[in-house]
Length: 390
Ligand SMILES: *Cc1c(COP(=O)(O)O)cnc(C)c1O
Image: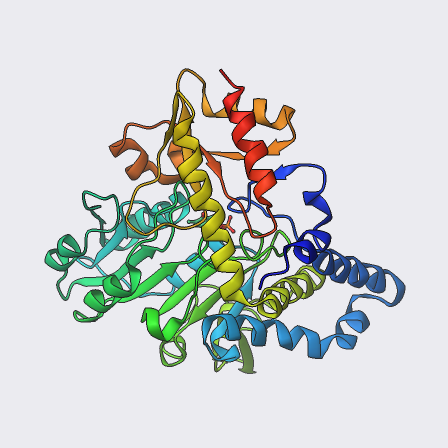
């Protein structure tokens, strides 16, 4: 059984508000904050190098914990400062030539789409969109018909930023691999709320952030790269950590995913990320995931009962994001009015998922994303607060 009282006691930020923004930047458990602050203080006492040297085992354990979460070898993980950084570190290392095709998902995140457009302009490759099916999720039949040997990379988004659907990414990856395309999974909104096993998913690379469902510090992210593949890719930028200067005119790349990392990093943040992932593993990820799903489902049932409220989630399988609109009230107004009642939600704007929002003629949606530490009393308070908006 999940110990909700313990989860809440570990999360000081949930005492004074109803917090529904774990899809944006969640409330970290106490151990994450304490770990990061203790390290900053230690750096101030003895200097950053000695402070890091004292924590070498814990720093190594960050990748071990992430590897455990993903069913991956720690050597297949590269740490970074954001999901977009990790995604693009991989994406920009994939060789592209004129005539090559890049496929992106209909609900792909803006940063991914922008990078794809830039590389298409630079290389002469093309960018095409995989349509969504009538339920709103990735259209697997359409994907199948789009594929040929010129498709070099397929970008899949597991859970879009603007709604609660879960894309059938394992099936999509299986189809894409048949033509030899690389599959890059944006797991930014699934890491920490859905099971992620890189072997079962069958993806070549996966990126995620620390601050969302994993409840880590801001400025943290990571990349998984399939080990044999990592050895054949050369990142666009190197330093003395991702490569070794072996002769006046030569260098050798790191022999694992650390070729996608730079030497310098925020050590306190990285230790905090390790503490966050370890905290999740200790709670029992399956229990946390089930609690998130239960809370989101509760809201998806309760919100449509309120007059003027429309839940905007699509798809057949759902995750912890509940998107909705209120008739006659701009989503940013809804967010601000709820904030006055100590309820934290955010707004997802058209520009973040341009293709999907344009197709649905939506300008923005309110996003409520309850983590496992949110109580059902909190959810009821939120629903009552939405009722008072009209
Ligand atoms: C938040 C988000 C990102 C970007 O994460 P950053 O850590 O801000 O780079 C990418 N994809 C999706 C689906 C997201 O929701």
